[in-house]
View 1 (tube, one colour):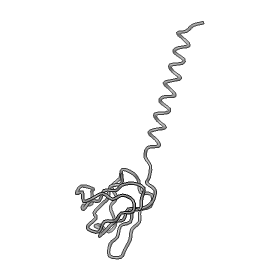
View 2 (view 1 turned 60 degrees about the horizontal axis):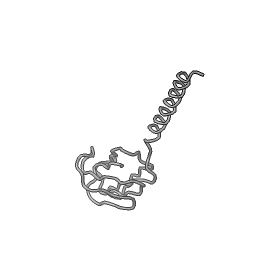
View 3 (view 1 turned 135 degrees about the vertical axis):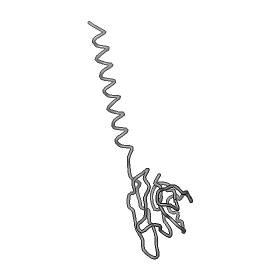
View 4 (view 1 turned 30 degrees about the horizontal axis):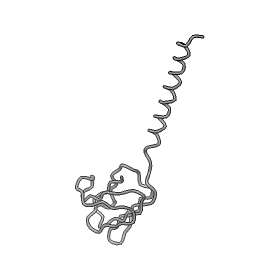
Length: 106
């Protein structure tokens, strides 16, 4: 029995399984939040259902006069349209009234 050949086969199998697990882990990490984010502007509402994680959302028209977080994640509220001028953070069920240029979905 040649242990060297058997050990190499085992090493290749373990490496292939580890690579497959890594790729599967990476492909499932980009997900959308459940629920919705609702922008308000003069009686008009814009709803984003299942907003993507790790993304900057800009209401149309921008800026909005408020936002409600009905999602499963925290959102950062910003006064500009490129998620640069931080205002506050909202958890699910919270609202903010004021200038909303964009929100960052965590």
